Amino acid sequence: MDHLEIKKSEILGVSMGSYVAQGVAIAVPERVEKLILVVAKAFGKTSSTASS
Image (cartoon, rainbow, N blue to C red; front, side, top):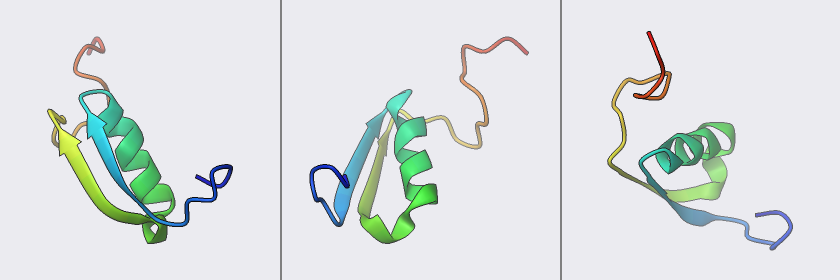
């Protein structure tokens, strides 16, 4: 976002990308206008494919 001089954006994360989108929203919430998560895992700290 800095490189492209984007000050604020809407972020869409799909499946595993939802982890990345959530990470951005947590790290710099003032730069996220809207967060859209599709097929995200609720209350998950690890991937659904990770062994327990």
